[in-house]
Amino acid sequence: MNLHDLSTQLLFTTAPVWVQQTSEQSFGTSFIFSLPVPDTENQQTPFLVTNAHVVKNARKAIVELVERQGDLPKRGGRLRVEIDGNAITSFMDEPNDLAVVPIGGLINKLEKQGRPVFFRSITPNLIPNERALSDLSAIEEVTFIGYPSGLYDDHNINPIIRRGITATPPWNDFRGKPAFLIDAGVFPGSSGSPVFIMNQGAYAEKGGLTIGTRLLFLGVLTEAILRTEPYLPPVFLGLGLVTKAHRVYEFAEQVRKRFLEKT
Image 1 (cartoon, one colour):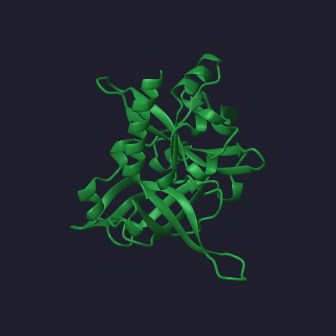
Image 2 (cartoon, one colour):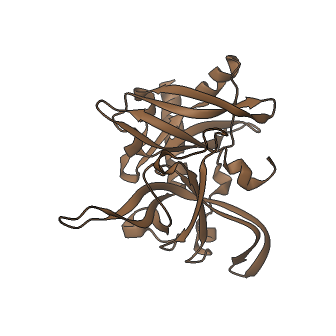
Image 3 (tube, one colour):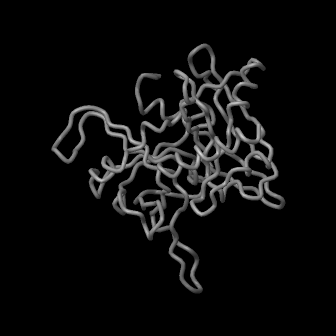
């Protein structure tokens, strides 16, 4: 395993989440997003991010993390941890279908118990600013990582990597919301998947062809688009709605402030 490779590191940004509601269960994808701690060096505040519709009315949730052995992920080292329903639903942005959970205390607790967590987090520096976003092409190849229909490599504890293209320009707000569409195989369970532009080798930019690697965090999958017609079963259109990354960042900052006020 080449942990110096960016695409390999992305495997350890996500975690499957099982949610127990009052009378039913749901499943989705979550990922770790970290904010730098102000006035410190190399300190981060980690959050677990998923969709509000995945965790709404949760009594409890189970999240599966990867155990760390030394500086490496432990092969088959599964850490299933329970998060109380109140904790996982305390901070939700329902209009944008986001739920953000501070998990620094959980990670520290597991460390003290001798069960350290191996993870990589998505950080704000991966989010394209307004100018960089406007310089993207209308059609960009996208990569998203998660657990479609609950499928993953549970032996190696690895998610599923999928690819598609932007279906609406990523600089536009689809139907007036901070979101855009992708054309890809999006299914239940993919909800909460982080969406990236991940280029290795060469990629096209406004000025021409660039040699190198490019990684941009574009947002989080929130919905598989269905065609619904009277008297017919719904049909997946192969389209997914993505809430833009800047909204994830803004809401995480709000959650950090509110969480600090509570503690």
